[in-house]
Length: 144
Length: 143
Figure 1 (cartoon, rainbow over the protein chains, first blue to last red):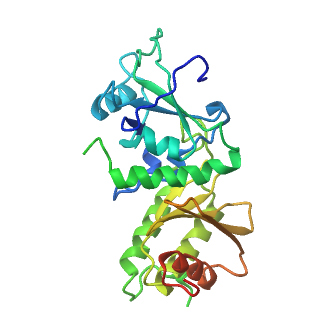
Figure 2 (cartoon, chains in turn purple, brown; figure 1 turned 45 degrees about the vertical axis):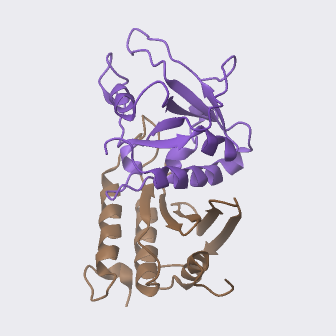
């Protein structure tokens, strides 16, 4: 996962879609801040999102959760949104990162990355709290 | 009377406490690798600590809303509140004798952090944590 040689997203009103893992959603629809910052070594300081200018919350959810090879076969409790402006104000850099199809997974031309490497890792949890508030204020985008 | 020992009790917060306890109970079903092959399930110690502290906290501090409660990949439990413009997390980790609380102001980015020992905050006494959280709401001393 890398943002090198990609274009940074600058349209501040573009909404970026974030999938939230089922264990990180309460029944009343409150997501955990843990869903809004990278925590795994494999993440390398990046968080996956989808671009609202290229897909919809429903299409992003379907592509993420459908079984391979039609989708990525991942679990999601729904889609939350963060604007490019909210992300950059929090110190995170959003980059386009279209994903080509492989033998087992489909293409995702709307894929993008939130790059947390502009900040010290010890600040990522704080940033996750900030982004959670923004996403929570916007509400779950899909399912409605 | 220990909150942690009670299944049912007569308190206006009993519904909130039971929801938190039911949520924590569901964590016992989480298995190793629960997040795309990574992540430890919450330990019994972390669940029990969260159960006792959060139960005591809600009963003793009626102005605090019920938190969101989530597993952490490190095998702990994290309680989360949005209190006005503050987003607050309290972590209960299995191997850690301390309880870590952090909050961030959504508009200014101001951070507040405090660490409690289990002597200070436990199933019998959640006062210091409750006062710290209530200060975020503007109801505590010094606000």
